[in-house]
Image (cartoon, rainbow, N blue to C red):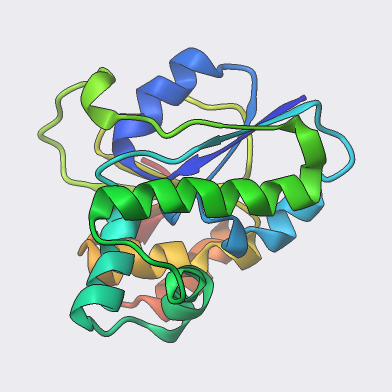
Length: 203
């Protein structure tokens, strides 16, 4: 089995579906392995290959950059799970940080999966992103093979325990106001935590 770990960014939807149609896909803000402990534990002993796919012009890395370089305040869960792993690292630009993210997440995956790990930093300027005028939304789902989604949809696919920092970034950082989640119980929990967001169980 091939396992893909990538970012929730909407621009990657068609790329992942085209290039990895049969893989199990895990996605969150920044392809952040630190936030995926519960999710990855389930796959530790039954994968043949793990492919890490962060990307350029990453919103999650912009969040890290603005926090560490500009002092922007974030929620505690985002600081703990995403930002703090970069706090002792040296970088001068967003592109430096994106390359550093590739290195850090690769190292974390190698500790779990050994030599099964491959990694690539996707240049979003070189992939085909279908145009959209639809408002942005977040789709919460379990790890699974990629499905056809519009390029307005940010995808968080992980264990329920591992989604909350990515949701904080999407809702508070990116001002996304709609969340679609298949699981009714999880939908109710999302509603209770983010009451200003429109939450539904279907598109």
